[in-house]
Image (cartoon, rainbow, N blue to C red; front, side, top):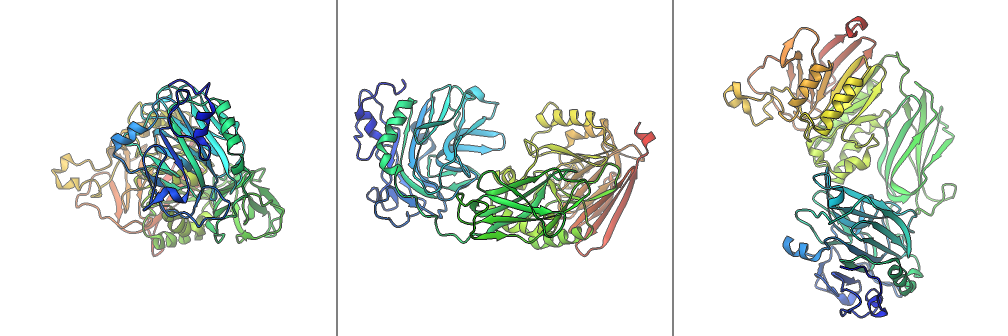
Length: 635
């Protein structure tokens, strides 16, 4: 449709209180239009001015005299137009849009939304949304012009923050070539990355007041006054006119913060510690500007402060000394984003903990390997406590950190809570397992190099290559090409690859395929097996995996067969907490040691000597092996 250029005041009134809603020759009707007030609600449904009725996620909070709109708090789900997929597709815009709303935000969220019809699951990125994060409004869009095969989302973030509890006008427009975001009449973001027709999910939803897709559910908490969706792109003058007509809403008194007992949801933990830097993270249930007090003694003293308020907190300490012990604690000041770091108020302060920067080149080091910490936090906690007693420099986790990656409580109450004695003092480096479901929480909680589902890091003379074998890793794929290039360029003495699914396994986790004629058994994960060729070609020393909830160590393997030297050791360390699994009755030639028990591995590296020790839940050493590599052999 043509842009909304020469519109009369009749059309402008579509978005103002009590405005006319009949069609007008100079302006289109909205595809959907909602005014949020008590009279529009009947039997849990919000009656529209245009478009489908909404099933409310919950009743609004009690009205306050003189306040426009309806305020929602502690919803279980957003407000939904419960329609067949075919009907939803008919309502949504195809190539252009204007989404306009008056709203406030009470609870900042990493992924909040006023309207969404979106799917963002791994590489599958389709749809659009008008939303917000912990401090800024956002608009997300996927189009044919930027499609990489399964959709590609641009998330345009406002250049200035909103004020919590304040009613704001927020408008997003798209004209088929340019995406623009407005806040209170001002352009706060624009992007030309997307172009062409909107790429919608196969099964789109119509969601008001929340961000909802297959594995994320973030209902909006705050005030909604109105929402309008058009299938044409408004000009800036239209946005300005709408702002003037809503001036009384803009002047409305700021809502007091909703009642919440301030608390720390995730205690401080460490990520990405180098010789000179350390990243400290934690999470609160209220937005604030986080602080870290740190130093070389328990008195700490130095202070690092976040630039913006949030609930997911991340502070990087810099200019540190290698192999140095530092003390730190976090401070979270209750009262909202407006609370300045130096002000007096309610402060949540964590106990003093410690971190050690990475060793100098040539200094021996030790690390722990865990996997599949899911479902039994008491088991994972006991293993973490035992691992900390060995004082490792860091932890590697080979996937399935939780049992359901889209369950926030499993992250906050199980994974982080159980591993606290270990990960508050040493950094952990994870890979994705199948149970993470590639859900957004993994990406929210991890400070890792982009794209986070694969990356590499080096510690001392050892380089780690972290992969996601839930994705396709066959020759020619993104990760295969990256790994091939990274291994070819590596100068590390020891090379260790980590991914979730094991290329070699005698366990019955693969459809009990040993029950078929054994010559047809896969004896490992077929998705991960294409990587074996790279491991052979570039002489990878160890491949560490989980997925199977037991322990298995192979002989050195080359060309798929055991060798006495110059091969790769394959390890399964999947006993971090998940229910145990037993191996099949067949012993393949690659198997050297197998055990069904909860466990972890402790690894020490000193020059050309690498030693692996495996400890069970009772603290008993049940397996050990040593690899040796001389400089001459490496050359």
